[in-house]
Length: 306
Image 1 (cartoon, helix red, strand yellow):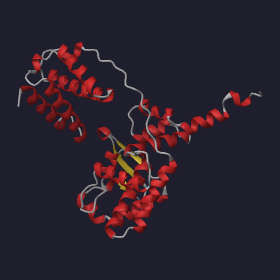
Image 2: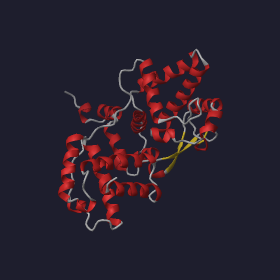
Image 3: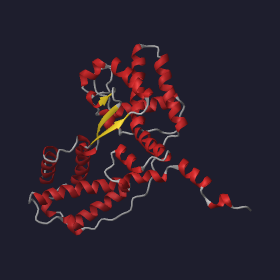
Image 4: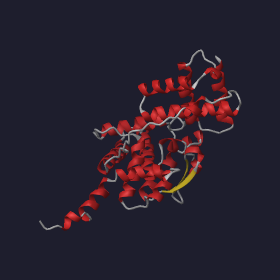
């Protein structure tokens, strides 16, 4: 382990113990900083200059998309801020660099409601017609997970980290721990969703208690991100859905549907757990149904007699 790698290891320990960052963030830092050391295999931190960092950033732009580059630069900047704070370096080379680049504005991908309906219908059909108890129980859990994902707009990481005590089916609420361990409580508005969650919780009581997570597999282990993704691919295929559906698309669809139903964007921001309303505002660009209604009824051309 060279000097740079040693400092990175100390920094990651600091992030875990002092900053209390979650494992997902630590994993991203670890990957980004490992790639950073690969670019500078035989250099000490005190030798790194602004020119070296600019060269590294240019390499990142050639390899990755702007959003990924932005994250990797942020990881390196946070590391150098730590080195400066610990007085390991006298001058932070990032201080002399101006980093400005535009990210392409990618609109969130949503799922048409008829596709959501077809997707859920296939899961319930699998639950009712499963040839074995094992397959029936899996379909029951899958239905509960997708219903909650769509009913609350939560992230997949938030869904998989739910504890039994976070889901109150009596009051029909879910306590969600978002980014930075920020708490938000979401009401489950559908009785059908509460019903399937109640049935699932009864059926999987032993597995839930074994792993201390609300969503579990039949081995008594927590339901993972990868398992949810595989499950979505499976039912998409069974329903003959051609579009590639990801867990986050249920979140995008949740937000867009609420916006089209005239829900105040500040309420949507709160339900999604966004720290800034600027993040939530991207959904104003994808509320196609609402836009169509406005232009059909409010546009002055409708009143012209030609």
